[in-house]
Image 1 (cartoon, rainbow, N blue to C red):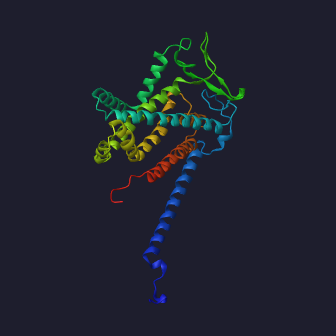
Image 2: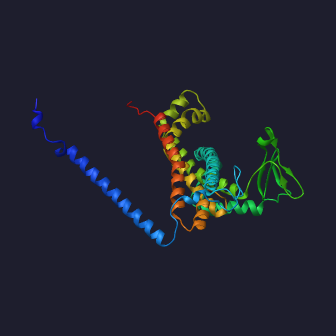
Image 3: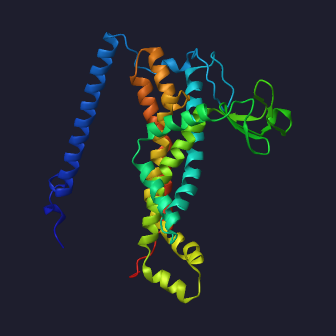
Length: 334
């Protein structure tokens, strides 16, 4: 056995030197961060630009037309930010569900033996992927506000569901009235009652859904093509039809392969919801713009907005990693 007295000192070993280098690098990063923050704070103060978060408790002083909970101009900036987060989550969650369904159907359609169905799905993917999203949002907004009928003569697309220039009106539970169902009614001056989605919200939801679905379609298609051909041949040998083979054999394996790519599209959809600020929907980025202008400073609202988007998107990434591990396709050698 080697004599412990002759063993080199810990700081002289390779591991010890590595720890020293890491500690020095961490100290350098902290010092550089403090230097940048200190100089930024001094420059902002010299220019009378606010950099703190004290404004969050001040009255916002503006109204918000589309809210999920009670709000008035006397409420604080913090509550206004909360409404922006709620609107962002609402459009993102709805968009994720609708884009997943539409994208999966289009991806399957691209593999169809029917020439017309395959051609239409291919054309849809190519058009949606090659037109900027912001142009698509403006196009949908113009379709809703210019081509749809007025609220006095709306399109009836279901029982008590109306579509017009004013948006989409639909029944909604009235919690204040003891769980009664409030239904919209067409009157002389428009539609009253029920719940409503504004034209701006509809344009954003449709635009994000159709745009993201094009990318999901390609991921699903590539996932199906990545499944070994022997799986299809084995299903055919068992007498399964093409539809059953797709539903029971190919799609479950393809969706496992597609999880990482689809999750990236979900996170992109969440971040792309910020583009709705150009349509005057009050979501998170729109709140940032208003607050920054009111307080003559972009630093604190910008940091807060970036942090909130990160906190909204990071759980999606973590969930995707867990799903990927649980549903990972085993390799043939295992």
